[in-house]
Amino acid sequence: MIATLSRAAQSLAPVGRRLADALTEIREREARRKEIEGQWRARASVDFFVERLHRAEQRYEQSQLDEDLAAACLEECLLEKARRRAGVAQQQITYGMIDTQFRTEFSDEANRELLTRACSLRLKVATSECERITSTEEKRLSAEGFTSDEISKWPSIKRARDVVERFRSLLESLPARQPENIWKAANTILEE
Image (cartoon, rainbow, N blue to C red):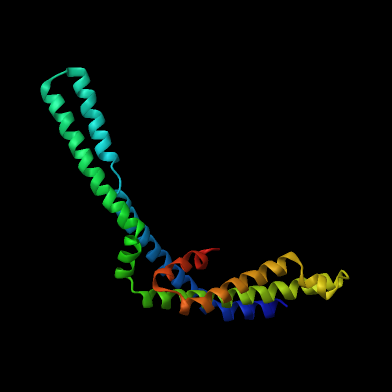
């Protein structure tokens, strides 16, 4: 039994390394996507200008000087302009600018290929794990007198089969996904 498991583990070692490499690449791309999103969210924020106006108004309240009033008025004008620009940025976010910029940096086909490779490797690992769990649980539960129907519905076996089915289904859906929906599969593939 131990020899069989070690041979199985050795045969999966190259798969594990390739999977780790693919997941690392997905994480790097996802980090870049989040960076792009952060840049766009910053464009859509007016917090900086609100704070400047608040400070200018406080200075005027304390000093009552015309120069401080003029500064507060200018800050209010800047805030209004910033709100207009932030509105435009928010519309661009709403209509998919983050994904468009991400897909410009990483082509749809490159993303599809990476996700397909990672998903197929995750499927191999999940299938191997499912076989191991099923074999172990079947032996243990059979010895305890459970029927094959009861064993097939056992929670650990069912969970392992669900994981295999999730990756199989995802792998089958990747070739047909629309370009704007390809990267959404990354979250499922990265789940541990």
